[in-house]
Image 1 (cartoon, rainbow, N blue to C red):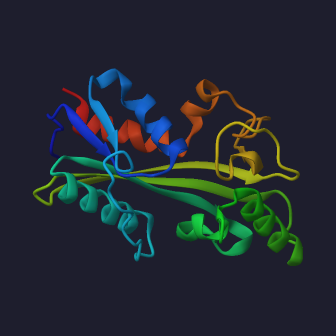
Image 2: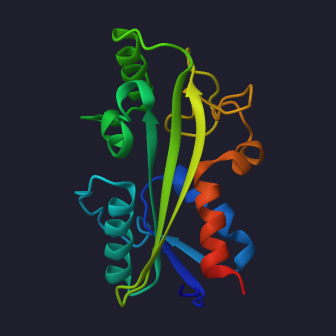
Length: 203
């Protein structure tokens, strides 16, 4: 496993919520973090059908374009009653002509569960895959999972994406109701990040 020994890292995202979460997780490592958006990098087309595949596309694109190591995340929510959908297409469910609307996406998911009378609890999980890629083409990949269930109506205005309808296993607050410090230890991205740190940052 390759160690990260640079002092600058590109976060391959244009999503402010993801950038904030990942920057906070990287804070202890004295690494200068820049986003793909701030560098003016385009968003590559995500053509894979797995989280790992799409994370690799984004990380390698940013690493080559910036000539710096790049960290990309691909994540989404899988709902058992919907056969694992929306999964890698989670963000697509939020697309509108005016941008992404996750209230619309959450409503779509719940309405689909209702239309098939899916039994409760409506089990679901967040998955996150992190890919750390170097300009020479090498990469390391790590996955994290947060198990839980869907709830309705939406609860909380913290977090982002599907957080207001996701109740993590063993908790009574949704991700949307939790303060960042409450959510962090339970979150899929944190779990993937812990593996990344152990593999690439631990000295």
